[in-house]
Length: 96
Image 1 (cartoon, rainbow, N blue to C red):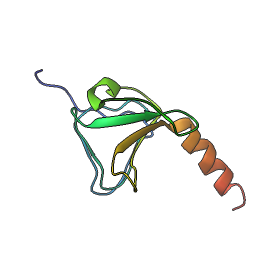
Image 2: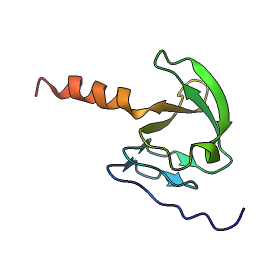
Image 3: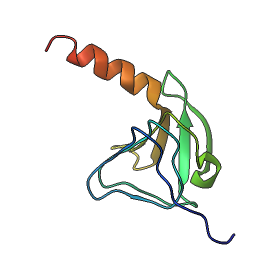
C-alpha cells in the first residue's frame, strides 16, 4: 500500500470527467467519464476484442499504449492496447 504517485506519461488522453487512481505510461487513453482506480476490475482484450483476463487495474499501472473504456452494453471496464486505436484514427483521418 502506501503513497502511489499518480503520474501520467507522454501523449496520454484523459477524457472529460475521467479520473485516475493508477499511474499511466505513455500514449494511454481513458474514455470520458471513466474513473479507473487501483481496484477497478478491468477486462483485458486481445485484437479480436476477446477477453484474455480480468484483473485489477493496479496490475496495469505504469504500462504504455493502453486504452481504457467502458463497454456500453455490459458496463464493464475494458482495456485494449492503444496501438489499434492509433491505427484506427490514422485510417479515419486519412481522407481529411
